[in-house]
Length: 278
Ligand SMILES: [Zn+2]
Image (cartoon, rainbow, N blue to C red):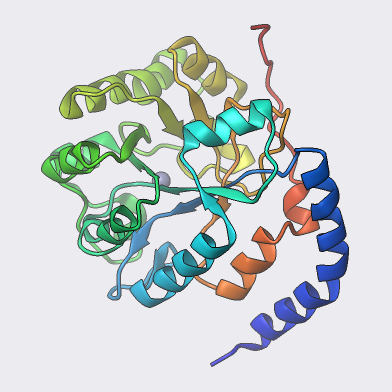
């Protein structure tokens, strides 16, 4: 059933398409087509939470994304943020580490050769502990095992750090705790998969969940980039260390509207922190 909200979004999208097309033509001519990065959490057909998308909806999105965007890695996304981009391109990420993703969604992406960065919370994986945000919903949903994460890494999926225990880093004022959650936990994760952890995603990822200290600690530790989750495209010539991500919203109309260079998604502010001289 098409909801009233989807109808409204679709009406808005169609009404603004001519303006968007003209703007996209201009961005293409400048080699400045902004880069999209999506984040998903869990692909499953049972125990639907706000951070779960069904297999059917996920496949529909992947079909549409593959037709309309070049599917690239986070590394390639950053390269284009620095050097220019003249066509629609998009990267896929996952947060937290849900076991069901390995049953169907990840095999689908691997089969289609779509690059993926997969961010996991160390303690939940190692101790096989359900996430607090699921327990609060009354669901002890299964998390990935260490063996699954090792298999993902071996299959070519980039494993990223998502802290030790999924705290709100915006409230962490101790540098020692920040270092432990961001750097030490990622180092331990890297040892489990025998590969360095190059990317970090901040839990919750809204502006309030970030801090200048987080970016400083991550940069000094040698991370290649830090992902947020408060929406927005990544502009060319922008700061490529901070990667903004858009929610892989289960509502296809909403996602398509955002990704067709919706004006609001193009104008999401950067997070203010010091960018050191290179
Ligand atoms: Zn998370």
